[in-house]
Length: 329
Image 1 (cartoon, one colour):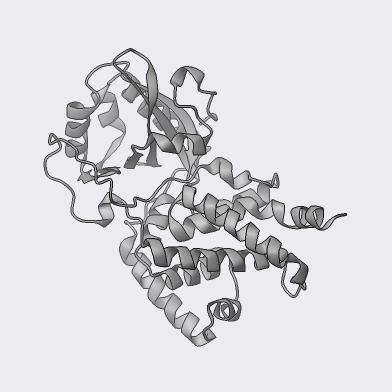
Image 2 (cartoon, rainbow, N blue to C red):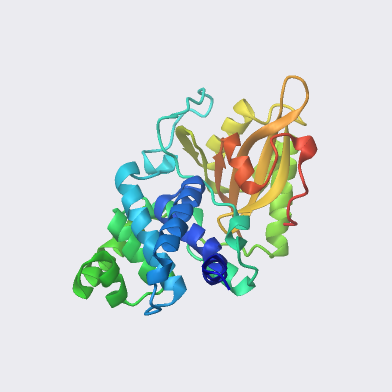
């Protein structure tokens, strides 16, 4: 076996979990792809010197973490609108995008299986990529993120984290306590999430898609919780409460049946939709990726990323007529 073949067979199966790791650190699927490429490049250059004192998996995560720490120093944090201020008070006002803000992005679940068909490994990669959790991580410093992810997601021993970060075990344990406290403050109130395979959740998601495709505000109102929130980066304005959210949709989106087509997909470990909007000529074009968070009491949160450039990451075309069927919900 050549060195190239040995390297590929030893490292290729970890690509999906490295993508998830870099996404947790950076909050961007696109940047995660670039940083994993950098990780593999650095690993290839030093593969001859790898002595096996740790597992290949641990070795790769060490490299990826250092790559991410350097990247965060240059880029700063990626927020959601709710991380920048209070909810807007006028749902009928025009939305003004803030294109200069490096917004948090969704993470396509399909990337988790990159290079690995082992269901257990894919499930492990899915841990810790819930959108609310990754958004809360953005409130931490780069080193705090690394400590929290390495200890609480990858379950590394404190001594191993300390070695990677060039500090002491005591400092890691102290920093981890502070990071957990800050994370608890930044996270929204914990909701009991419906399981993806739950028939009740599937029914709510089907009603959600139907409400948008049929411009059915009454149907949408029935499945929204009273305290539902709506966020739509790159617009910094966000809305809280069923009345405000419905007023926004009535004014800006659900004005006529047939305006939208909803294609099921998966993002951040939960069901999502690729949204196609009908243009002036009648053709449906890529518009947004939306993640409705379903709880037993209804939809608690809707985060809609209005960025058609995300569609290739999800393996979806820009035109609805060429869209492959999405996964069953």
